[in-house]
Image (cartoon, rainbow over all chains, first blue to last red; front, top):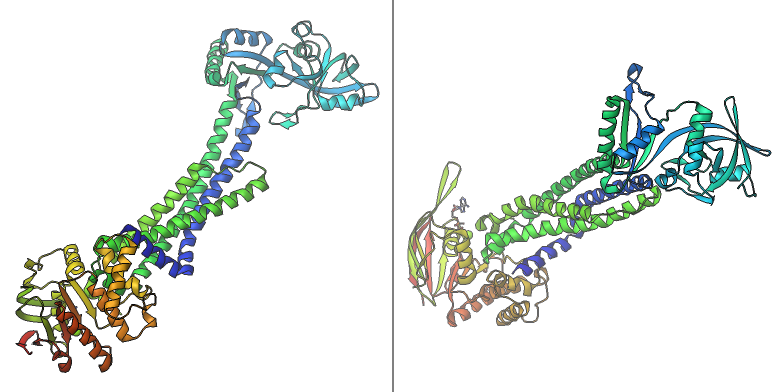
Length: 403
Length: 227
Ligand SMILES: Nc1ncnc2c1ncn2[C@@H]1O[C@H](COP(=O)(O)OP(=O)(O)O)[C@@H](O)[C@H]1O
Ligand SMILES: [Mg+2]
């Protein structure tokens, strides 16, 4: 019997193709919008997060605390707290940390033969390469000994090597560095691999020298700007943050003097923001689903009125309430579910177009498809019940005499 | 006794106005009878027909169909009785315009839970052949004449093998020649043992039945066997 009723419902929908399509349009657009928006949201999100997680999600930044500047502006309070000594103590006291490297850099003019180049000079320790997952392609990296002795050795970024030593092997060559009133002579011991522009900015044109050289021979002070540390694994990144926080709070006795940010935290924040955003937009699109439901209810009410006589005939021939109810309910469900399917197709196409333009991967999640489709079914059910009940309750005598 | 009508009374309320469409009707009809209910317009014929057909219920009084008291049955119980025991033939034919003739005849089978499309169609084909329409099964109602439509309606009324066939002015929308043909079908069905109750305001048509119940202002004025 259910098959006959299903067939009757479909027959009546196909008999009024244009009308059925127009009343489905609201659902089609609603579902399409939900799918497309959620997909665009997650696509953009996955692009941002993949850029950030290139850094490794077990990276922790330790820097000076943020204090309120004048006029409510935010300014970093430069506090003289971060020494090389403290870095070692952190590493010894925080078992979840595997490596730590100081953040210290300057900028100056590099001269090699007739070539010169103004660029940033970064102070590094041997751990730098593992933490940033950035290794020399030629020669070697700075050793523990060179850092210890503040030896004047330099490793060039791939782009910088090209600038200073075009078509020439830079290994063993000498480079002069002018910073403010100082002049230092370095030996090139390595060239870094190419690593494009990522979330860390452009590394290609940097010069890397031992952090101790910057501290002792350029800045003449023992403080660095902060540290970049690495947790043993992604899983203990949160624990590591806690350990660092605990240690520094005790050591510095002032939580305002430092600030710890982990990549994970940044990722969390970004995911939260984009998630909320796409949820909100999806919700707005969901409203159009509701409007689509009202369209379906409207057309079903018209249909019930138009077919009053048919309902009377069916009742006279033995249709019970449940038969009439299910006939009309199936009709509205068929409309909303078919509209939902078309909407999924439309949303998919829309998401594909936007992802092509935005250059991120097409992400259409099962969840968003499932949620949008079940929501459209729910809308069909909800807005179909009233007209169907109205039809099923018609008095057969009155319905039969309806003109 | 197929039908026992005991002090049937029907009052319609329209706001504060009450219309007593049927004042009092008591009669009995046995199986195999062919009864014409006759009377002027507004005399309560249709009202009585609706009660006998379980489409409506009396305001007061008792109606026994096949020994069952249906005057207190629920809507769904009435629907089941209509489906199993009653076949309707209306003045307006009341076919579903978008369905084919075969599908129209199948409608009562859908609600009686007879499974299988093939089986339903077999039954419908046989019913259509009985009324001489075996060759028109895939036409739609607007493609056939009024007389043919009424034959389809008769086939549909017969399909569940009901105890009672109720016809409300079955010839009202037909010319007199076609009307006679339809009456002939009823006579033939009656000869085969079907119980038929037919409402008409046409004395000549009524004379084709075996018994006439005459209504006037909601009261039975005459009830006699005529042949
Ligand atoms: N649904 C109704 N509401 C109010 N009055 C009705 C209704 N149906 C019938 N009537 C009234 O009841 C009386 C009998 O009607 P009906 O049984 O249709 O007569 P007939 O079929 O003999 O012409 C008429 O006066 C009619 O106006
Ligand atoms: Mg009448």
